[in-house]
Length: 232
Length: 218
Image (tube, rainbow over all chains, first blue to last red):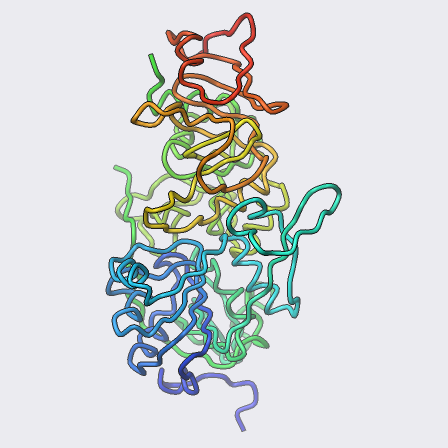
């Protein structure tokens, strides 16, 4: 009996069950706070026709960008893409579909998906290409568009520390989309820098309660920096 | 003389008030942070989930887990807070950010803004711009008055796909400060040494020109 112990010891176990055509929600902003090990495992498994929901798609050779190399991604749902040549090539060749989604709407789609709310109204995107074909309702004289929430077959998340029950704490701005992604996966995998015992994390400081988490794995992270800016 | 990028940022900085929470977009808007008056406290919001953004780090302080919305390494000021993307856009969409400054390709007399997509060119995405313009009451657009071919960016109707509809009321260009009201631009200030005639000739959209248009104080 493992009770609430969610720790797995290999990425094979962590990503077990992922299959062709599934939707994967990934945390991260640019290369900050991305689930490096889960992405590498998806690459290794060669799973195809994936729909990936993530703010960005990594860069050439790192992050979600490596899943483009063997054309594993069918569709990206993102707010900002194209930091990689391969992405551009596949997009222009019609091999890759992109659903551009405003960043706040994307975050709310995940949040709502995880919270059991199928859709919501937002002013974001009204009167723009994003609003085309979507239901419009007026509240207090202002038009809003209906946006449907997102859930994933899998969610892959990068945390800082987790206990074995899957309670997670994020570090700095590596939090970003991670806690939202964590709520929206049918199976949620969290990879962290350190796994601790129950009771070692302050309950008031937990960002993602373990109820959302199915598997926890300790990883090693390169943490590549996209724009290294310093002052003298 | 048309304003330099720095002067544009200095003019925008005059719109800051003590105690403001401010979101600055990429490019010229980012420079506004350099001109916050020393007797004023302003907190910068970065939409990837940071309120209280500080300057770039020193070499020793660089931390891959601490970036801004431009994916640059940054620091936090004392009293900063960090949160999820949903929380970040809740404060943006919910109208809690006091001032948003962002760039644009075009703005029109109806307060429409186009800033994210040029058909025929590679489309990278809108990032958080659509949420920012939809959520903020107080938005300043900074841009050059005309593009490099001399075509006005202040129009009767935007020609490019919109970022937001009817949400812009203030524009600072390298030639002028304008407000948008009742379906027209109102010329409020001109850049030092720039004539009203030059501004009129470079403004594509309907513009009200008051009898006296003061020079900006930079």
